[in-house]
Image (cartoon, rainbow, N blue to C red):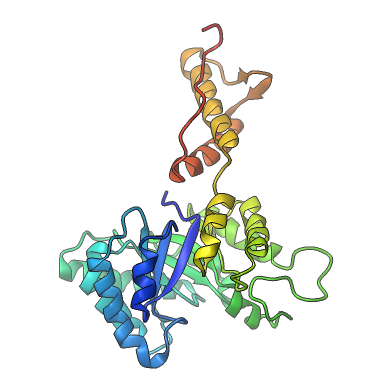
Amino acid sequence: MRSRRTTLAVPGSNPRFIEKAQGLPADEIFLDLEDAVAPGAKEEARRNVVAALNEGDWTGKVRVVRINDLETRWAYRDVIEVVEGAGARLDCVMLPKVQDPSHVQWLDRLLTQIERAMGYEEGRIGIEAQIEDARGMVAIDAIAASSPRLETLVFGPGDFMASINMKTLVVGEQPPGYTEGDAYHYILMRILLAARAHDLQAIDGPYFNVRDVDAFTRVAQRSAALGFDGKWVLHPSQIDAGNEVFSPSQEDYDHAELILDAYDHSTRVEGRGAAMLGDEMIDEASRKMALVIATKGRAAGLTRTTAFRPPGA
């Protein structure tokens, strides 16, 4: 599992922002060739991205490039120039505005052709699919099953809100007049279920009021509570908050590791299918729940502060 607690969007047309991003603590950096780049700057942005991937220090970060959507005239050249130029230092390609599994399959085939031509390891470069409208949401199960390269489903709230005529102008915020719950709950759960059914990560989209970190934290806590793996960030001020929200607490992480140890000891050493950890009974379902928390904690770099002691030891 790649850690994607925070996914920082960086315009490919801005070398200063690209250089700064290398020193920021976001788990993933995606260099954007799409919405953040003006039409007249697309070609220069490609060159910037290739140079940055090859020459920059991206240690510890997931390296992603978001190309233009395949209905544009830029998409195929984005893939060819970036992957041929810097494919060995690229982890994933993000495909925006995915509406149909054929979109992901197009990118998969093009990546395979480039990998074969360049002598890259075939299948190593992953795909992130961005769900940004009603058509994509309706087809999300087929999209999630469309390619073995697929690693994440990513919510794109701005275009999605426009596609369903949602009544708000703040991307990621509740629409005025909706007072009976969370207007995004179904959307987020639909993405999450499709992702989990196909062993993918689920990433929440950005919150555009970048200077209101408290509001960002509130929105991030919503998707983290459901089980999302991370969230887009648009500004360095959002990164620390996002990393904290999508990481287990030290207490929960330690508890999860103790559950795994206790269950392993009970089943492997004592030959029993259930165990006691203090006053808590644990079983296979407990192990699965603990493994989720432990895996996220390990990916976040947490270290244990407790050690398991077998009963009677």
